[in-house]
Image (cartoon, rainbow, N blue to C red):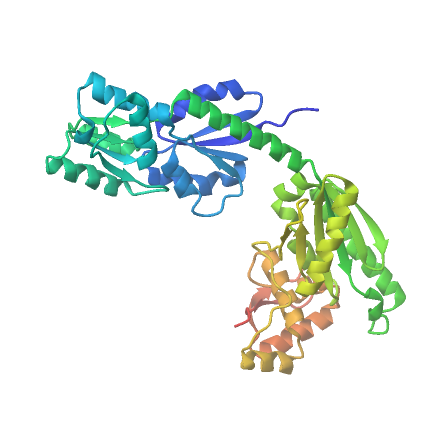
Length: 438
């Protein structure tokens, strides 16, 4: 079986990235690296947002960019090299033995007090009253510069030690004696080993089986409501066609179980990677075909049996949550949902706007139908609709579609925005814009 090579985004200043990329060649059979060089650590957030869809794993040059990137939840695993004793030892030896500067005459940022004093003890150095600015996470460069600059101006220190590249460069540009603590090769190699393990775990997870259970409840109840048994059969075939298009995007397979139930088999990787195959989008397309209760349950598992069991459990949660709901149960038993897509419309939407409720009632339109019309308009991407397009999308006659649109215009739920030239002889078709719910 071919090994999956994980895509790793490397974020940091040029010198740190060069070292990480150099050591990264040792992992060429497991990891593929893409460098993102910044001039200021504040660029980290934009780099991650613009490239997160392309990356499997993130590697940051240090604590500061890592903290900035993880302020918001990341979909990918993220790592940074820890500043261990050996990184600090190198700088302390340079300061004390090479440059003969007492430790109580330096200012040092980022490093916590305990590891600093422990390292000094191991080296036999008297740490005394060292000027430390310890912190976890991120501090602005301006705050670090102010810390060092004040101590220098007050004559309390003769040199500065920093872990931040930009702070180092700015102090150095002012002619101030400054040292920079950087991760060494050993810590970078350890970090990349962790990233490699995460990549293998991700590959295993993506290979897991994903089962999606789609359930449309009681389609047979439409018989007698202007629908015949033949109409119900045609509707079932329409459901299958929509699901088949969806499954094709997932490179999966599906089985029609009958009575409005469908079972879809694919992989977790295909399900998670293809945003166009979102379950909420599938629900929206199915809902356009009929006013019926419908939900989706998705399950992940190492085996098909485990995944199907989780899909049924997810369906139970979805039904309890309401209508047009998709729920996911992971292989760990974790329940996630309702799952939503950026372009989805909630057909169960309610409004407490009494005027809107009255307008819908007068027009003889339910909120569900109203949202279906909005969905058709939105999916066309034109912010406008015609009776022909509604008839085709909702499987109704053009006459019925025109009646609905006319009623909506009369009750200020839609406006006429233009006309469309006919393809053959006849009158132009009106173009409407449906207003969203208040």
